[in-house]
Image (cartoon, rainbow, N blue to C red; front, side):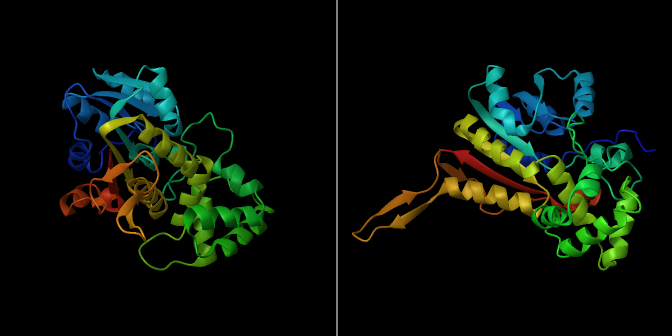
Length: 305
């Protein structure tokens, strides 16, 4: 089984540092620490970092690096405000979220995230959570599976796949990643460059780890934590999470509305932000060539006013 940790390559590294506008002596929360690629660069630029992650393996690897200026806390990024405050950080210069599954998690077959490697159907970022992808696939009703695949994977064949899974598991439960991936391929066929199980695996992973719920809490908490003039940077890899971030920032950026009697007024959610770049920042061709996983990365940034 492939369990060797992969070399971690942080995506959009230079763009993210520029977006955060890292200041010497500034305080920054990395709510999705991973293998600390972004956090180490913030420290190198003179910032102090509180790094949060729910993955014990990632935390152990970063602790072994012994990075001065980096403090590590276990938890979910949805709790980042509470975790920061419990560490004495009631206000910070910047918050970073690098969402989705990390390269080491994908490359470790034992974590069960990849449909390209044989491993247990797990997908838990925090292994203390009780529900695995196998439990969802083997115990959920067809309607619930359809809802998961449609809502979190935007899978057009959600109903067909869900019903086929329920029918198949009567004879043999799903236990491994390749078993499920191969089954989905047989159900819907293969067209185009992407594996037909891509959306199903994304949906299961997002449901197992409550990724949308955690993201919504992290956006609210992170914006409350950032001081005026501070930056909030979010890197996404799926259209679903990118839309969530875009909508959130747009709501807090608000808009000027013309009044019937003349003049205008600002309408939006508080606290107010300024969108730093109207379009999401994407990886340059040279980065995509050296790190193919950066192809789908999008960086959005807002500054608190």
